[in-house]
Amino acid sequence: MAVVAIDMDEVMADTVAAHISRYNEHFGERLTKADLEGKWLWQVVPSDRHDQLSAFLDEPDFFGDLPLMPDAVRVIERLSKTHDVFIASAAMEVPHSFNAKYRWLKQHFPFLPQSNYVFCGTKSILAADFLIDDNPRQLRAFRGQGLLFSSPHNEQVDADANGWTRLADWRAVERLFFGS
Image (cartoon, rainbow, N blue to C red; front, side):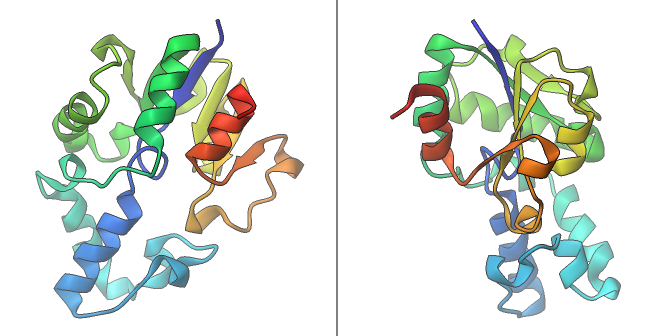
Protein backbone atom coordinates (compact mmCIF):
# COMPACT_ATOMS: atom_id res chain seq x y z
CA MET A 1 0.00 0.00 0.00
CA ALA A 2 1.50 3.32 -1.10
CA VAL A 3 1.91 6.16 1.39
CA VAL A 4 0.42 9.47 0.25
CA ALA A 5 1.26 12.69 2.09
CA ILE A 6 -1.08 15.61 1.44
CA ASP A 7 -0.48 19.27 2.20
CA MET A 8 -3.33 21.17 3.84
CA ASP A 9 -3.08 24.83 2.76
CA GLU A 10 -3.95 25.41 -0.89
CA VAL A 11 -4.44 21.69 -1.45
CA MET A 12 -7.19 20.62 0.95
CA ALA A 13 -8.11 24.10 2.19
CA ASP A 14 -8.52 27.23 0.08
CA THR A 15 -6.22 29.35 2.23
CA VAL A 16 -5.57 31.93 -0.49
CA ALA A 17 -9.29 32.61 -0.95
CA ALA A 18 -9.65 33.21 2.80
CA HIS A 19 -6.55 35.42 2.91
CA ILE A 20 -7.72 37.48 -0.08
CA SER A 21 -11.19 37.82 1.44
CA ARG A 22 -9.81 39.24 4.69
CA TYR A 23 -7.43 41.50 2.78
CA ASN A 24 -10.24 42.88 0.59
CA GLU A 25 -12.55 43.40 3.53
CA HIS A 26 -9.88 45.17 5.60
CA PHE A 27 -8.50 47.39 2.82
CA GLY A 28 -11.66 47.85 0.71
CA GLU A 29 -9.97 46.22 -2.30
CA ARG A 30 -11.19 43.80 -4.98
CA LEU A 31 -8.18 41.53 -5.36
CA THR A 32 -8.91 38.13 -6.95
CA LYS A 33 -7.01 34.88 -7.39
CA ALA A 34 -6.56 35.82 -11.04
CA ASP A 35 -4.52 38.83 -9.91
CA LEU A 36 -2.00 36.45 -8.36
CA GLU A 37 -1.13 34.59 -11.56
CA GLY A 38 2.38 33.24 -10.99
CA LYS A 39 2.85 35.19 -7.76
CA TRP A 40 2.35 34.79 -4.04
CA LEU A 41 -0.09 37.18 -2.34
CA TRP A 42 2.88 38.92 -0.68
CA GLN A 43 4.27 39.80 -4.13
CA VAL A 44 1.03 41.45 -5.25
CA VAL A 45 0.06 43.66 -2.31
CA PRO A 46 2.02 46.79 -1.35
CA SER A 47 4.84 46.06 1.10
CA ASP A 48 3.39 48.49 3.67
CA ARG A 49 0.47 46.04 4.02
CA HIS A 50 2.60 42.93 4.68
CA ASP A 51 2.34 43.32 8.47
CA GLN A 52 -1.45 43.19 8.17
CA LEU A 53 -1.24 40.14 5.89
CA SER A 54 0.74 38.42 8.65
CA ALA A 55 -1.73 39.60 11.27
CA PHE A 56 -4.58 37.87 9.41
CA LEU A 57 -2.67 34.58 9.73
CA ASP A 58 -2.21 35.26 13.45
CA GLU A 59 -5.97 35.48 14.06
CA PRO A 60 -7.00 32.46 16.16
CA ASP A 61 -9.81 31.41 13.82
CA PHE A 62 -8.05 31.93 10.47
CA PHE A 63 -6.86 28.34 9.90
CA GLY A 64 -9.93 26.84 11.56
CA ASP A 65 -12.35 28.60 9.25
CA LEU A 66 -10.94 27.79 5.79
CA PRO A 67 -13.14 26.72 2.89
CA LEU A 68 -12.59 23.23 1.49
CA MET A 69 -11.18 22.66 -1.96
CA PRO A 70 -13.87 21.12 -4.20
CA ASP A 71 -13.95 17.30 -4.09
CA ALA A 72 -11.15 17.11 -1.49
CA VAL A 73 -13.15 15.24 1.14
CA ARG A 74 -14.58 12.70 -1.29
CA VAL A 75 -11.27 11.95 -3.03
CA ILE A 76 -9.20 11.84 0.16
CA GLU A 77 -11.72 9.47 1.72
CA ARG A 78 -11.47 7.25 -1.36
CA LEU A 79 -7.65 7.41 -1.24
CA SER A 80 -7.67 6.49 2.45
CA LYS A 81 -9.38 3.18 1.64
CA THR A 82 -6.57 2.03 -0.68
CA HIS A 83 -3.50 3.99 0.52
CA ASP A 84 -1.91 5.12 3.76
CA VAL A 85 -2.85 8.81 3.81
CA PHE A 86 -1.05 11.37 5.96
CA ILE A 87 -1.74 15.08 6.19
CA ALA A 88 1.56 16.95 6.15
CA SER A 89 1.33 20.63 6.96
CA ALA A 90 4.32 22.95 7.21
CA ALA A 91 2.67 24.41 10.28
CA MET A 92 6.00 25.57 11.72
CA GLU A 93 5.75 28.52 9.32
CA VAL A 94 2.79 29.73 11.44
CA PRO A 95 3.29 27.83 14.74
CA HIS A 96 0.14 29.07 16.49
CA SER A 97 -1.92 27.52 13.67
CA PHE A 98 -1.60 23.99 15.13
CA ASN A 99 -4.80 23.99 17.18
CA ALA A 100 -6.95 25.52 14.46
CA LYS A 101 -5.55 23.19 11.79
CA TYR A 102 -6.06 20.19 14.07
CA ARG A 103 -9.71 21.14 14.68
CA TRP A 104 -10.25 21.81 10.96
CA LEU A 105 -8.89 18.39 10.02
CA LYS A 106 -11.00 16.61 12.65
CA GLN A 107 -14.11 18.46 11.48
CA HIS A 108 -13.73 17.88 7.75
CA PHE A 109 -11.79 14.59 7.62
CA PRO A 110 -13.07 12.52 10.57
CA PHE A 111 -12.25 9.29 8.71
CA LEU A 112 -8.49 10.00 8.98
CA PRO A 113 -6.80 8.96 12.22
CA GLN A 114 -5.31 11.86 14.16
CA SER A 115 -2.05 9.92 14.27
CA ASN A 116 -1.80 10.63 10.53
CA TYR A 117 -1.49 14.40 11.01
CA VAL A 118 2.11 15.57 10.57
CA PHE A 119 2.98 19.15 11.51
CA CYS A 120 6.47 19.98 10.32
CA GLY A 121 8.68 22.65 8.82
CA THR A 122 10.32 20.92 5.89
CA LYS A 123 8.74 17.98 4.16
CA SER A 124 12.15 16.46 3.47
CA ILE A 125 11.58 14.35 6.60
CA LEU A 126 8.55 12.59 5.12
CA ALA A 127 8.95 8.92 4.26
CA ALA A 128 6.08 8.76 1.78
CA ASP A 129 5.77 7.54 -1.78
CA PHE A 130 3.85 10.63 -2.93
CA LEU A 131 3.50 14.22 -1.75
CA ILE A 132 0.61 16.34 -3.03
CA ASP A 133 1.67 19.94 -2.42
CA ASP A 134 1.30 23.39 -3.99
CA ASN A 135 4.71 24.62 -2.84
CA PRO A 136 7.64 23.87 -5.18
CA ARG A 137 10.08 24.41 -2.29
CA GLN A 138 8.51 21.56 -0.34
CA LEU A 139 8.41 19.30 -3.40
CA ARG A 140 12.11 19.95 -4.10
CA ALA A 141 12.96 18.80 -0.56
CA PHE A 142 10.78 15.69 -0.76
CA ARG A 143 12.45 12.38 -1.71
CA GLY A 144 9.43 10.59 -3.19
CA GLN A 145 7.25 11.43 -6.19
CA GLY A 146 6.14 15.06 -6.13
CA LEU A 147 2.64 15.94 -7.25
CA LEU A 148 2.23 19.69 -7.80
CA PHE A 149 -1.29 20.81 -6.91
CA SER A 150 -2.15 23.86 -9.01
CA SER A 151 -2.44 27.18 -7.24
CA PRO A 152 -2.19 30.75 -8.57
CA HIS A 153 1.37 31.17 -7.27
CA ASN A 154 2.71 28.07 -9.05
CA GLU A 155 1.03 28.47 -12.46
CA GLN A 156 4.33 29.27 -14.15
CA VAL A 157 6.27 26.40 -12.56
CA ASP A 158 7.21 23.69 -15.06
CA ALA A 159 6.23 20.53 -13.20
CA ASP A 160 7.61 18.21 -15.89
CA ALA A 161 11.04 19.87 -15.80
CA ASN A 162 11.17 19.13 -12.06
CA GLY A 163 10.02 15.53 -12.42
CA TRP A 164 6.61 16.24 -10.90
CA THR A 165 3.09 15.67 -12.12
CA ARG A 166 0.82 18.73 -12.12
CA LEU A 167 -2.67 18.17 -10.76
CA ALA A 168 -5.27 20.84 -11.54
CA ASP A 169 -7.75 19.78 -8.86
CA TRP A 170 -8.98 16.84 -6.81
CA ARG A 171 -10.65 15.20 -9.79
CA ALA A 172 -7.18 15.09 -11.41
CA VAL A 173 -5.82 13.45 -8.24
CA GLU A 174 -8.59 10.88 -8.47
CA ARG A 175 -7.83 10.16 -12.14
CA LEU A 176 -4.12 9.76 -11.36
CA PHE A 177 -4.65 7.21 -8.59
CA PHE A 178 -7.79 5.45 -9.83
CA GLY A 179 -8.04 6.15 -13.55
CA SER A 180 -11.54 7.57 -13.17
